[in-house]
Length: 123
Image (cartoon, rainbow, N blue to C red; front, side):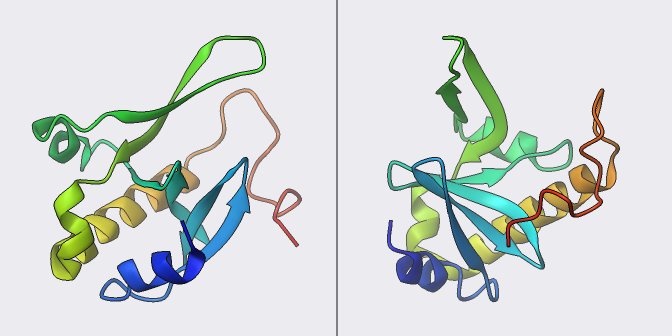
């Protein structure tokens, strides 16, 4: 999906940046990744406060096959199709996804020293 198209889709939400990654793209607001694009599909960050919204609509999580052959399930869920044509509702879902991503970023990373030092930040 074209980065300009993504920015247009999220225009009612606010300014977003799009960074290519792993054959798709990450969608960021305020320096936090709250959505991703894979195969022209947008997935929004799900957390304890907004996951029921995705479950209620039977929206699947983003998954991929790791190098070891195991399926990895991420905490991003498919965005409802209707939101592509409803900027105001999309903005509400995006705010909830950003809040989930911010809460997740505030938690310490289990078993690693990845931390929030900025050492892995893209340049």
